[in-house]
Length: 334
Ligand code: UDP
Ligand code: MG
Image (tube, rainbow, N blue to C red; front, side, top):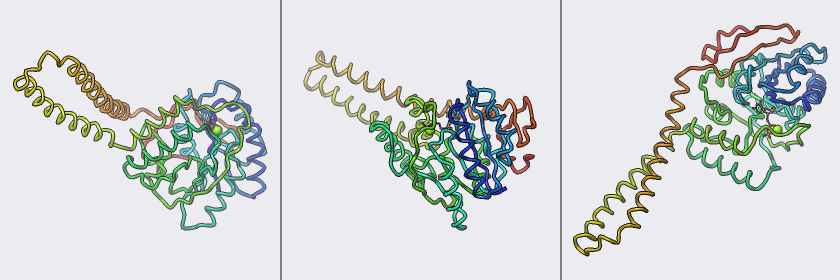
């Protein structure tokens, strides 16, 4: 198998038929032995029946499909896709045709043209989003790059629209964490990555599945999953404020016994209470974020539960089971 294309889908009934037409036409014309790996992330619309039709269709040589028991999110969907992808080269593409199959094919050819490279990562040459969103995203990449342990080489703006060799896929699968942040995982596993500029198209239909709130939570997840700097920050801020408090204690002593000014201290007391109360809560909050993650990781829950998996011929491979994301991927039955 030359190429596996992973497509996470969440309520994409408007886009999927067009996507299937385009993808089969483009990859078919290229003469590739390819497979499409659809992951239905708990869609509430006709996404799954459509995917079942694709599995039964003659138009694609190989189609695999995983159906989640509920909406787990795009990251778990990508993991499921990786676990089921069997190609020598693996690609990831959104279902809404913003990332076009033609671009993915060009990226695949770019990878083949560079035997020394392991991954081709697309980044948007021009961004079609609001100023606020663009500024927030830019700030996120800078913060992440500065704070994340072992992720210094992250290409700013690189998405998970990528094509990579099997080695990279296996490396990603070897990471058993529950909080998955693909951009960080790709940077962490390393390998030789070629940037590839692309122009995202308009969504073929439906609406974006990301709200600003979801994006903010995703960004924080990314930073907390890859960095301990916020914890250190808490220690530094706590240390500085403690020193300031000790210094201020002597100022108060001087005020009381030297200048006999004591009754006038009320505003100062209130200000300090608020300041240190705030700092304490901030520090506790940061520690709490990590503690919650340790707690959740410690449960060793599977990253997703699949209701069923379909193979190319439309036969049901498994029902009621679920893949457990364990680092024993080398022994997985394909
Ligand atoms: N997606 C998913 N699960 C989710 C949210 C999104 O599988 O909970 C998929 C979605 O179907 C699409 C891709 O992730 O294929 C990117 O989502 P979207 O196009 O909404 O994001 P945007 O392009 O606006 O960043
Ligand atoms: Mg999109």
